Length: 182
Image (cartoon, rainbow, N blue to C red; front, side, top):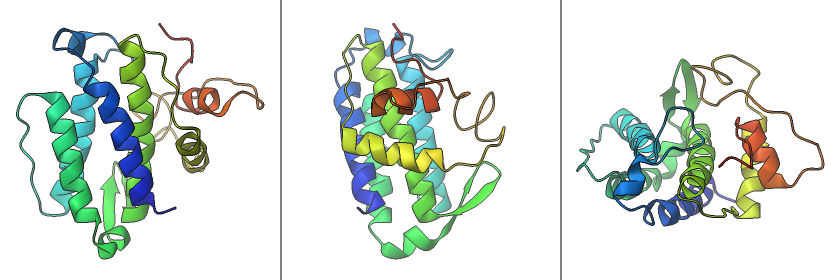
C-alpha cells in the first residue's frame, strides 16, 4: 500500500482523537513523559512545519493545536501528492532520507501519538490493526542507535514485550509505551 494512504489513515485516526479533546483536556497529561495533549499536537504540527519548510512551503499555526494539526497535515499531503516528492531527500534529525522514508516516520509518529492523545482523554483506544502491523514493520527496521531510541531520540526507549503479545501492545512497547498507562 502507498505510504501516503497509510499516513492519511493515521492522520484521520489521530484527528478523530484530537477533535474529541476539550480546551481543558488539552492540558491533560499523556503517556509521553512531560507532555500534555497540547504538547503532543504541537509536536506533530512542528514536524509538519519542518517538512513543509524543506519543500519551500510555510505553515503558520493559529493557536488551536487541533485545527493546526488537521490543516498542517492537509498541507503536507498536498505536496506529497506529487510522486517526485517521495524521491526527494529530507532531513530528519542528523539523517538525510528519501521522502518515502520521511513519510513512513511521520506515519508511525502520528499513529502512536493518536494513541497517546486518546489514552490521555480516557478513551479505550484500539488502533486499526492493519496500520499497527505496518507501523511495527517500518519502525522495527530503524537502526539501533541512541539518535533513534531513548532520551533525545525519535522514540523513547523500547520496553520489553512478549513476542506473542497483540500487535498494538508490541507497537506501544517498541515506541516506549505501556499499554496499561493511565
